[in-house]
Image (cartoon, rainbow, N blue to C red; front, side, top):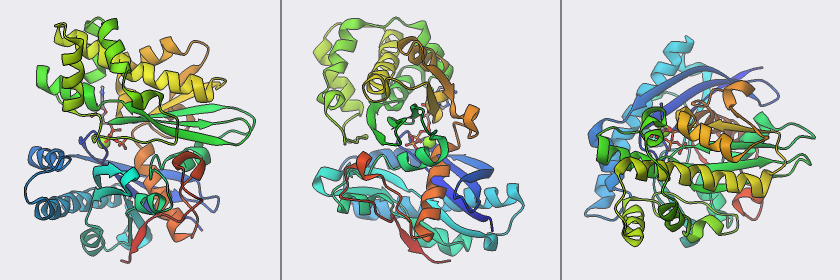
Length: 367
Ligand SMILES: Nc1ncnc2c1ncn2[C@@H]1O[C@H](COP(=O)(O)OP(=O)(O)OP(=O)(O)O)[C@@H](O)[C@H]1O
Ligand SMILES: [Mg+2]
């Protein structure tokens, strides 16, 4: 019998919450039945961003932010139910990722602000949360966690395919023809472009990449940006705002030392995303027949064009072409991870995260 699960994702871009309600057949493959999105109110976004670095009274402020976040999550779940015309009692569980404010797997932790108890209480639906900690406890990076889902959904026997998620951070899943899967975070996708756009144009993001397209790539600056050791470190690896943030960019612009126009910097940041992703793809899925792109960055037409330029001979397309809209993939992955939890099945791929083995991920908050 088909089962309904919801998934909620609010990622490093700090743009808002994506939610999907998905129907799982006995094969465990989801079909999205509704999608809802809520942008973060300005004050919440600012507080979440502030909580990414150390500051006063963090425990108290995190708890308050988690409650505000949970209220938003409840609204998204309510909307998913209304759109799909189903009752809360028909949904087995919500997979709720929470909001990452620190990701330090090498120090033994990754921290997502979340209040699953409030979400369970107010939605009347069981919640599975804290997916990453168990993988970290097993020696893994706790990220990226979407690789197993990408394999289940987009894998094709005998064919190599690459899946690239362009959120705040970019992550690659290489689905190899022999059935092996590798993957890791490539580097910044939108996080630096977004902060540069906000600072110089007042816009939260560069819609369609139009502003980046109006600038000229500055090779010497690009070279300075590419010197970041993370880009050439071997996988398993994962990253976040802990590394790629305003300080990182200011430091590199200072090292470069030559003044550039703001649109030239944006063009160069876009190229940094395109190059770090395509180098990773060539190194780990060079024989892929197609690259499937998802996440908000898939809407950046200039970035999509730059990916295609660097990957001649590879079909660069949206996951929409393989049955799941680019904006639904990450939230659907957390619905899938909740499904796996309730079925007692592992959610991680140790070949990707570096964990000691497969683990059932998350903690359950009953309805
Ligand atoms: N029309 C658009 N043109 C260009 N960029 C866009 C557009 N729409 C969204 N984006 C980019 O996508 C980002 C949001 O993407 P998404 O929600 O996938 O990232 P995320 O929240 O960091 O998720 P995750 O961590 O799960 O990957 C925005 O911050 C913006 O940079
Ligand atoms: Mg988002």
